[in-house]
Structures are given as structure tokens and as C-alpha cells.
Length: 290
Image (cartoon, rainbow, N blue to C red; front, top):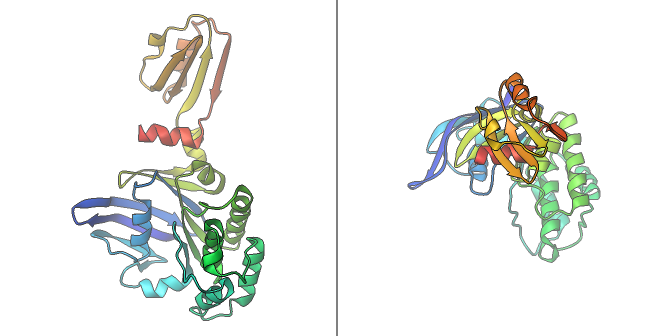
């Protein structure tokens, strides 16, 4: 069953394109990555999905309910952390979190203290006295304090130090094991590779690929490195070879296609070494963007 379904979702700001014909599904119980550089359309997709802005056309549902007409019914089950967080500066952290918890028909007090301890958040400080990273911690606690069924994260780790990032990842994994679905938007590819089951790549407002992270790395391109005295660059100017680069006695390229064809090309060479490896998610991502 899908917890999110997006179908040809389009958003224009006057005549400026935000996103166009975006379609994908997020399965219930999975951690789904949404990757692209700044300006690719990630936040526009999320804000439209959450009913914070209205689409120009297309549709989106969460838990089978329309995100625009039934948004008030589904928001109680969603935890959202925006890329930028803004609060009442004069409030203490504990007062703000209790205020946020009051919108739900449950006592969130115990949960607030548990999450604050995990994220090492001082509840007695005023918002105006917090660093950007600590304000992000407030956003994390606020987004999770009601134990939502769906967690939507937009660039969640910006401002967090490496230790807190790791603690945050463990927290999200824990919530996922308890049954929460996670929609994780980021331009930091190592985060997505570390955390997500599947990933959608967005470019210029269009989703250009939706794939399992493992499949994306293992079943697409191979990264080939050949080391030898006289390797002719033209030998590998064949279909399926991209990013062909030669330096000194080394030739590097990506290959997708019939492996036997590649072996036939290689076996005629006298090599000192050969390396065949799966490219990192970042290398695959950059390939799509090129």
C-alpha cells in the first residue's frame, strides 16, 4: 500500500516553473529519498504535497486522502521538518513544544522530554538564544512529538554537527522500525545512500528517475579503471561508455551494456591493473545531471 501518491503534480509561480508533471509513490513503511540540488523543485513538491501551496494542476494523496481538500484530516498524522525553521523568539523551548503538542488529542509531554534528551536539547533556553543547529533540534522534536505515521523531512541535517546527524539518523531509523513512513529530501547524497530504501532524482522540476538505492548502484553503470602503458582512448569510444577520461597511464570511464563486449576490448590490452566497482550514489547522481 502507498502512503503517498503523486500524479502529474505541477506548480507554476506565475509563468515561472516550480515543478512539472511530477509523479511517484512512497510505499507505506519505507524510507524514501528525494534528491536534487537546490532549486530543483524539492521544497516546492513538499509544500504542495502538504497543502501549504496549491498546485497548478495534477494531484497528490496521503493515506488515500486528497492533500488539498482533505488536508485538515491528514495533517494530524504527519510530522514535518522544513528546511528553514522560524519560531516565536521570546518563548522558551519547553513552552513552544508544549504549545505545539497541544494541537494533538494526546499528552505529548513524556515524548517531548524523551526526544529532547536524545537530541541533547536544552528545554529551558529561549528560542532567540539558540544557535541555528539547536533551532533545528527544536524542529526535529516538534516534528516527532506526536508520533506521526508519516515523517516529511526537507534538508533536515543542515546545521547539525556530525555527532547529532548520526543521532538523528538513528532516531529516524527507530521511528521507521516502529511503523512510520519517511519522506527524506536532501542534496547530501551520502545521507540518502545511508538511510533510504528508494530514491527519486529531480532535475529542473522534473523527476527523471525513481529506483531502489541498491539497484541504482549495482545494476546500472560500472566504474572502470584501467592502468597500463599504452591504452588507446579510441578503443573505448563505444556505445555504453560515458565519462571517458585518460591521464598518464590510467583510463577511467563508466560503462553500461553487454559486459562481454567490454571484456573483448580489454583482453587485447597489456594492463598493469584493472578495477571494476559500483559507482557511489553521488557519481550516479552527477551522471544524471550531466
